[in-house]
Length: 154
Image 1 (cartoon, rainbow, N blue to C red):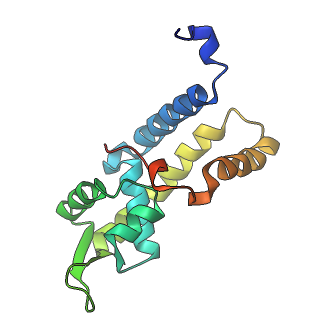
Image 2 (tube, rainbow, N blue to C red):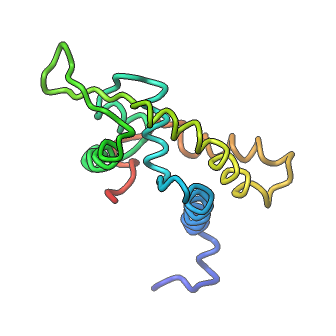
């Protein structure tokens, strides 16, 4: 038996999916001038913070599917935002580094990303935002969990 539309509101997953839709829509609306997706922003931010990170470690860090992170990185590389280099210790490993254009885009897009985050939290009173963020961190285990909790391939 399928749940009725009213019963869906009893499921946390329903609201989590809706919040994801709202989050992506706010992000895309605010960042459209830069043509960047939330996953691309996450990848660029992580590479900026960890130059010479390898692809597999990056995927784990941003909790993205390891089998599809390559296509995300391909798009960033084609745009000249990211460069791949060889590892001195393992020829099979490709190390990631932002280009000057990648650093510039990341700096330029930050205010738009902050606006998107503010739009997502705007319905909450200021006093409820920090507790909400703590609850989200608990529910997502701050990046913990198993391999199956990573994003679906997109």
